[in-house]
Image 1 (cartoon, one colour):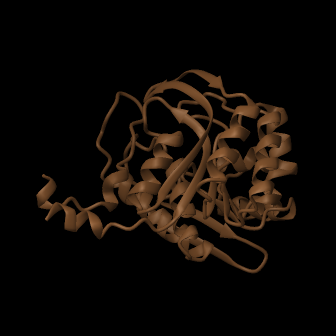
Image 2 (spheres, rainbow, N blue to C red):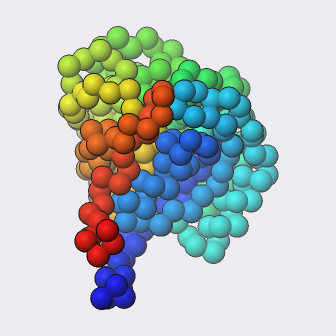
Amino acid sequence: MLKDLLIKLKLNSKILIIAGSDSSGGAGIQADIKTVTCLGSYALTAITAVTVQNTEGVKSVIPISPNGIKDQIIFSSVDIKPNAIKIGMLHSKSVIKNVLQSIKKLKIKKIVLDPVMVAKGGAKLINNEAIKVLRENLIKQVSLITPNIPEAEVLTDIKIYNREDMILAAKKLINLGAKNVLIKGGHLNTKKVEDIFLNRSDFKIFFSPRYKTKNTHGTGCSLSSAITTFFSCGKSLKKACELGIKYVNLAILTNPKYGKGHGPINHLNSIEIKKLFR
């Protein structure tokens, strides 16, 4: 019986995740792997940094060398070629340049960039030189960029107070070379969360419930990985954003309430556990 159930399992796609490690397991590459796996795909990884953190904050960041990151990307991908790439925390100018060289060599067309800059507790995870290279070079090479409001403000030099400011910032990112933009509106004080999707020919606002909880650690990482997974399986980018947002919203709603600070979300919300495994 167990053998019959396992035979029915089929992985939908392969995702290469380039991101930092979160020792608390709620964000970073741990959240990415959980998301990709729970949505039915296979995760390869290239770790860019090891963070020492818990739900209350980041204690330290231990960077991986740019060449070490590049080797992880190339060596894994020449063996198991990914269908799509998700990029998260890139902490320095040299790391971004090496990642750029790597993804150009791989010639993967479906790439989602989550421009991670600040941890949930406020710790800065990227330096100013790296932000400049990301803005001027990397965003032109990806399919979608998914900044939250503080990240969009840094990338565009626009202060965002409302929906109109979000749209203005999204348009500026398009003018800087981004193909598609999803600006996440969770930081705004609105009744519903409003996420703005925009490209040169399409526009969409995704409205979501706002849940009263501090347990939202890793939502950005999880959302970008969910979008990448749906996109890799053949969904349009706009549809992938819609499905990714729904997945993360349910993960927030069913969060396990772990930790004393900003706790993790429930990545397992998409999985139905059969009685046989209980």
